[in-house]
Structures are given as C-alpha cells and as structure tokens.
Length: 135
Image (spheres, rainbow, N blue to C red):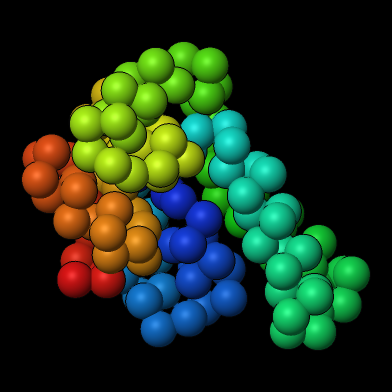
C-alpha cells in the first residue's frame, strides 16, 4: 500500500496528537510514503509557526520539521503534478496546494492522509482513497 502524507497529518504523527493512532497505523503498513516536494517548505513553515505561536525553541522547531521530512520515502516533483492539480483546482474550486497531494495519491493509487475536512470530501467526490480523520 502507498500512503501520501500531507503536512496536517504529518504534524499529528510527529507530535503524537489524537489522530496519530490512525495515521501511524496506516504509515506503519505502507510500502512507500510519498508527498509532493512542496511538503518540505510546508512542514518547515508549520515548524516556524509553532515557534512563533506556541513558543517552540529553535531546536524543537527544527526537530518538528526534520522528523516530518524523514517520514517521507519519496518526494514527487510538483513540476510533474502541477498541470493536473491546476485543472482539478479550477474544476473543484480548491487550492492547487491541496490538489498536488490529491493528484499524487490518485496517480500512485495511494491513500491520502490528511486532517483537512474539505480535502477529504473532495477526495471522496473524486474517488481518491483517504483516511477517516476529519470525517
């Protein structure tokens, strides 16, 4: 099984939040964990927000970003996904950022792990497998 991990789910895994059990179980059984390469900048930005808003130290923020990055087995270039993601974003009135993850999951036949309720609904509409968290 292939899992595509978005940053909202990755942060839950790294910080061992409530939904961590479902995400961790799926990741543990995955043959490969993928993400579009924009994931790196997104997880680093979330780590910065934790520093700014939650008082994380530099080392805590670095740990959050690095651990999140190390979960991923393979990064898929956004350059390979953007046209299809833009097409779906226009059709579905949803951000290209999120659609990069959806397209990555659809192309790989994987399950998209996310906490984004709107993205979960869109995955279901487009018949892309997703998790139940956020349902």
